[in-house]
Amino acid sequence: MKKGNNFKIVTISAAFCLLIIIVFIKVATFYPHWIEKNYSRGVYPNISWLYRTTFGWIPISVGDILYLTAGVLLLLNVVKLFKKLIHKQIEREDVRKTIQKAFFFFCIIYIYFNLSWGLNYNRPGIAYQLQLNSKKHNVEDLKVLTENLLKKVNECRVMLGNGRIKYKPYPKIFSEAQTAYRQSTSAGFSFLAYDTRSVKRSLFGRMGNYLGFLGYYNPFTGEAQLNLTMPNFLIPYVTCHEIAHQLGYASESEANFVGYLAATQSTDTLFHYSTYFDLFNYANGELYQKDSVAAKENYNKLSPLVKSDIKELREYWQKSDNIIEPIIKVFYDHYLKANQQSKGVKSYNEVTGWLIAYSKKYGKI
Image 1 (cartoon, rainbow, N blue to C red):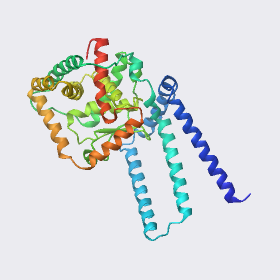
Image 2 (image 1 turned 180 degrees about the horizontal axis):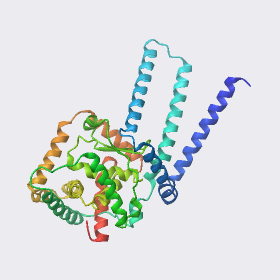
Image 3 (image 1 turned 120 degrees about the vertical axis):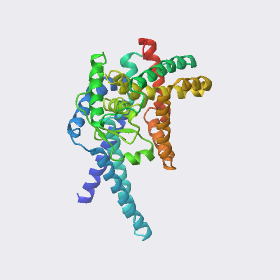
Image 4 (image 1 turned 180 degrees about the vertical axis):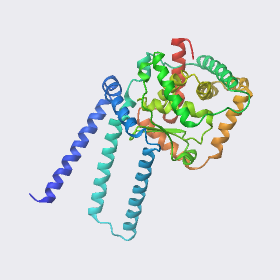
């Protein structure tokens, strides 16, 4: 048998194996409780621990370097392709090889993404673990929630002082976020155990301002990255949110809720303020769509210090307004919808539903 024929057989066999694995992954997504038991609470904690142990001690983001390298290689290949097109050097064999490479590349990325983290999108998750009934809530539910959050955010801000908040270095905040998760296990949330930390400063912080992100999780290295150009009072809650992703809570609403569970177990008032500030804005924003008068009344009841922080946050986003961010948001919206989050970027706001269900069951926020 000729060498060329052997290579074709190997290529076809490899492609067939990849497709079989993809089919198995897709079938598994129809069995969320199987994923919860065997993957999210079975295999995945070991995968996550291995990632954090391997990369957590490195001071810079390995995942960001990986993304940067991939971006440069992609750009070089696109330039190379355009040169061939311009000089009319494209042959049928080149097209075949390009399609073949693209097929294998996307299959491997899809499989790696799902097996290393992505299957968590299909788990029952926090609602199943806490037995929460997150049925559709009404305006009155929102009013009760925003009233409670309003009280919390005002109280916490007063406790932080009358002037600008005294902030800690971000490594200290990262460490305290880990402590908050440790304390949450003592409070009865044993499934939030988080030992080895891997939270880092994003190498793309300034770029992140224009792309519209405050933090992100890298499913290929298990690192949590923070855009530390954000207003400092947001950092504690965003850190807890990204750690939630590391623990296998893939959906944004669940990561928001898990971040809340952990951050409110911290002994640091800044963690409480950071959390209630963000959650109040989510809940009051939703209330505004249904009862703008009530939402405006809530805003008027905020302390001047909280209003000042809201102004700072608004100015932060206004500084980076650009034509690219809406385009990125469209792509991210489709990514979320493709991963079991039907509301796309609006799924972050669904944390209000979890909060209402939690407060009804436990009588507290």
